[in-house]
Image (cartoon, rainbow, N blue to C red; front, side, top):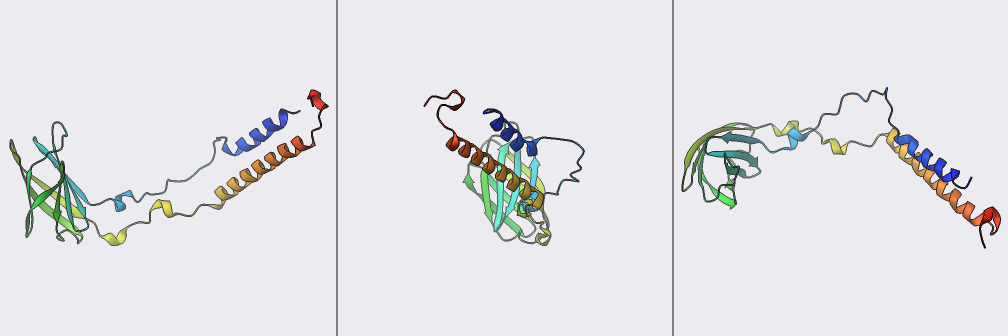
Length: 183
């Protein structure tokens, strides 16, 4: 009898976690990852690969060698898009930045990117598409918790509390010499 109570309590606590079939949970909720990501464009040639990411106040360019994916340092990068013609400044190895307000409005921005290093030169073309910012979806992490989950957690906590209380009461009322225990 001493060992059956903890066993029954552990089984009762595990009941809500048992898997079963036959429930339809519906379609998964759409995620807002595409709305949260910065607008990006990429181009790869035989020599270089470039990823252009729009950020508030400019562009970030990630430049690497196409064959090895090794960051390219010491490159001279010139970006041309419409009336904009500017050079990118190195930020860290393989990362270059441009400070401009040219890409703050929604729309498509075709760009020509000229890359020159000591041993190679290349010309790449990309189109950066900046979506309308007013259609951003609500992130899925802000949805409220449902009542069925709250009730399940509350019932599990109450059952655990009752089990701990039962064990504490049984230890207090136990007298020495009963059940073969030594005083």
